[in-house]
Length: 311
Image 1 (cartoon, rainbow, N blue to C red):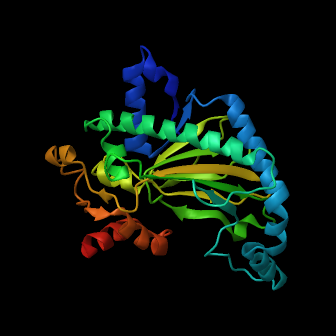
Image 2 (cartoon, helix red, strand yellow):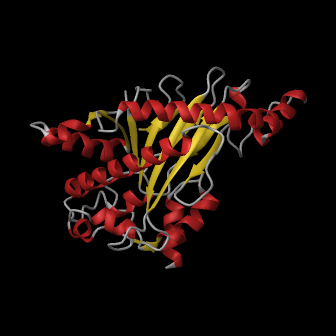
């Protein structure tokens, strides 16, 4: 069963109600969906592909194959004729872009292009959060205000630029181990051709099919909490592949570390015993991240229990 694909442009036309329902279904039943006609110019997306690919080739690829831990450890296993798998690391080259960290310098146009792209993605995330507000029946702007910890712009917006190089023994290592995302709304611009991303749906791993210039959306742990369980943060992973380098650019609209996260009061008042059996806690996002850093690749429920106990 393919991941839902939603035409975001129809929010502004006669099919608004249908599109709102499709987004609600994507959040409630899947935790993952793909947006097309999302308003980000194709010309900009093509430049993003160009500069990130060039950056990897010029500044990252040689170091990955010559000096990275996963390459060294996989080589050791193969040379020993061992049968084991690499369990606690990923076959991934990755770096993070934020407003105040150091960015790659050797690729022409990289900073200008990615700055423009991040601004567009942030606007798209905020539009999506307003759609979620409306679908959940909570005040417009509630999610954004919660994540910012008030009316000022304090939310964290980061972009993780990843490449998953071809792996000579993909049966021995995972591109990215299965996990749920800690934060809020995640916007992924994935490779047009090289697959490997999978989500866990109804107990089965399902491919997230590559669609040129689509933006994949998934809801993180904080959206699950504030929606009181109506929206789910789902397990996902990236499989290592023997051919092709997979490009993956994931942007995260996350709460400020000082933001207090809890289920929206309107959703608690409309309590549904089937939905609210877990009892989501109230906590400071920074405290949750302290737990998540240690438990990223483990089930999320003990993380919620840990911050509940701490508070």
